Length: 297
Image 1 (cartoon, rainbow, N blue to C red):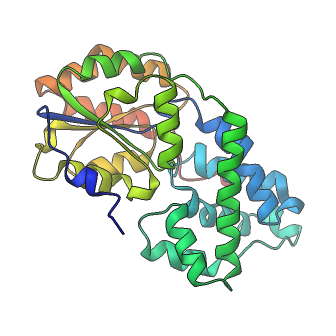
Image 2 (cartoon, helix red, strand yellow):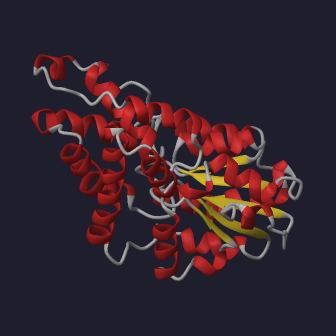
């Protein structure tokens, strides 16, 4: 079986700079739509959370959209959501059964390619593990709902195209996401911006930090690698590789992309990005994503 990451590992630079771009919620205004209309209804349906559906919705929205876990892969997001529900006094009062998912928790400790292909292979080898079979059925249903609800997709945020065009003259670019690769490829192609990037890396190719490592190791200097993202996981992926990070602030995406176009890219290319400029951006970013849910404050 061929290694799906080999194309990233074989990448040869055309420029001295590398820009890695997250997609959902960062380049495209799709996160709210996908989670609220696709992911969460299927969580409630497949995991039997109808008796506490209001709380399940609030917990899942906090994990995936409004917290330090924003942008996390769909599979580790499940135990985080279930743990919040188990610890919520109002849920406990209803004596609702929250799925324990022991096998999924163990799988998440060892598997890095957190996508349906790896999960399908595991389920084929372990047909009696009900939580894993449910996770696979849920994930497939999510993909089908996304295809139905999102349809032909949404355009990128304002200034995304301008940033891509400006960067293309000096940097190699790639998509670095935890969305399935097929969905990413469709969205970027439909909007006519896929030609700007040399690779579209989704969840099947590993975690975002691995994407950057595979595509950059030994080929770009750390101060010439920039990760653009809307979640703490994007910042972590950059830091794991010694790279720079430009945050797209949730709720202020238009402003963030405009700032990147007007000043951030110039600082990146002229070597004045790291230090006070980046630190100020990150400090502003952190106030958007708390680690404590509102019902605990």
